[in-house]
Length: 424
Image (cartoon, rainbow, N blue to C red; front, top):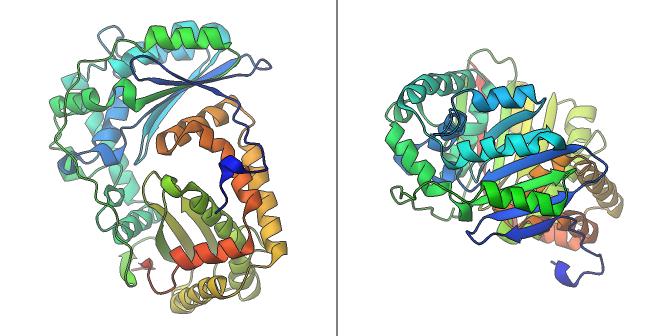
């Protein structure tokens, strides 16, 4: 792959990155044309940080963060955000948890201190822990009613044999019922520390003020604790086809889910190349698999393909919705088309079309403060924030020979995981 640091294409990362004395990373971009400020706080405390018996703890803690701190009463933060016209929410994934706040610039000095306080000094009251656990359990029950969620989780467990990416982010009911408030406090005080945290501030706030707010509000963290040790094993390459079938009620069409282990952020250029291959395969009506399987032969109701970029092993997936009698035929066609990717060069016109679409999609995804804050925070968790600017340069330089080599390396038609959902 080309060395982007020596590329003829200039890399433009418009934000500024600061490392505070306590290890906290602050990323700021001033957008003078907007009166909105987005603060997005990313923590390296996702599901992969959980000891095995603490499955679901990271997501559960995301809920409990909003239950207050010694200085912020339960509900006080939500009340302030609503009364200043702001928006706040959070999400947990495998590699991270993040908490974002959108406010008018005139209110950020009131709202950010409360968000920082509940993040850094969460109380996790016993009674709120018990009450909120029922909410999380309801999320788990609801997810089991979603066949696509069930299928994806089964595919993850089929694809990853060793890595924590195989575990459900929501956790498992039996383990969740065994969690205690003290265990959660331990998890919080282990991972919600400055060296694990990135504070992204984007919008109508000047650099000096943004950095001052970060220094002032992210200086006093909880006393450190230490969770039980975790061991993350590297995911070994697949050596055969791993097949599983599930029979689910209340589905009318079968699902064909196929997955391949691919590089994580440590090989970012190869991962992004797989993003381009995914678009060539299923990125619109004129793309190869969509045109053949849906538009011309009408073997599937829908088919899509994508790369789940992660810090460690990413996952390349192909998903089809189809009638049960076409399952074997469609799987064989997909494998044949992947084999063609490795045998013949993709036509230049197809590559050019997909490049335009991906680069345009990237540009459209950097138009608002929320989008920029999310982009910088995500990349700073899996790689570095400045790597986010490499995406269009990497895409624009990819050549047919490189795509062929990467397809050969990662998308074997003889070594993959396949999960099939059938109506029962």
